[in-house]
Image 1 (tube, rainbow, N blue to C red):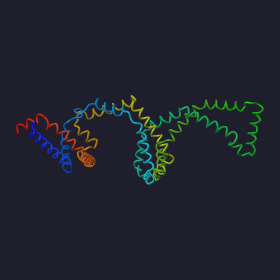
Image 2: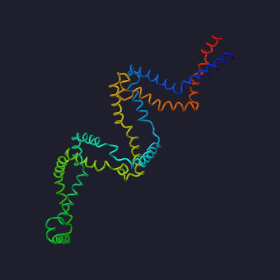
Image 3: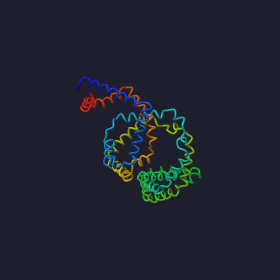
Image 4: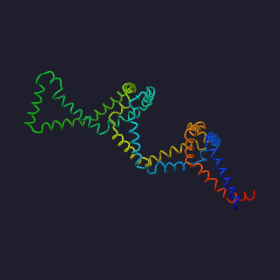
Length: 344
């Protein structure tokens, strides 16, 4: 390119850059974004989800970003620091539980939970069948019987000195027949072991009858009335910063393991498959609309976030550099040289 045509190309480039920069700020930028959002929304009303992407592509994103991406160890530390700041904020002592969850909402949650009658009965049965619970019942009954025999029965309470005599007799019998106490204990526990299934069955039946919907409703709402006026700071009393951080670290470690399980992947595939079955052949605006996204919502966020960010990038010189990188190759191209030769 000769010097004259080179100067003309440079001048055209500079004017084009100025034009673009002027259109990327203030009211002009707002109008540009609004026009483009409107145009894109028009296309979204015709283009289906299946044309834009596929189940395999969405699952690929989930696998790369959610399941397989290595997370920096600093993340749980940052989360712990933020959670500590939240728990120590003054708002915790100024806000009551009732201000966060209304009585109507609490009642609604309770009514939904009461509908899970089958799950409640199953949980009670599983607790009753657990060896730890059975051991607890056995020990409670054993110590209750022993305590009753030697201290709390009607005779020892009504007749002075009987309790002391029974304890004295117990000691003398053990001296006369060493191991008698152990024999009594062993036989009593053997009887308890034989009787335990019946005790457990009656306990389970009692709980099913006692934990009726009305009883649970009354108990939970009574507890709610006692708690709704207390502040969040009072409710979290005993949860220190160290315990909170350890809890978050444990939660992070659980997530690291859980996200790589076949179970998590299976759940993700089920959700994605349903999404495409529901919206795959429908316009994108149907999906966006069901998610509550509209052109007004998009433009509100553009004005609140995108435009201020672009302003900062323009002040830093990035926007001009970007425009030049996009335009300069054309003004030095063979096509531009040909046009300039023809004009000359």
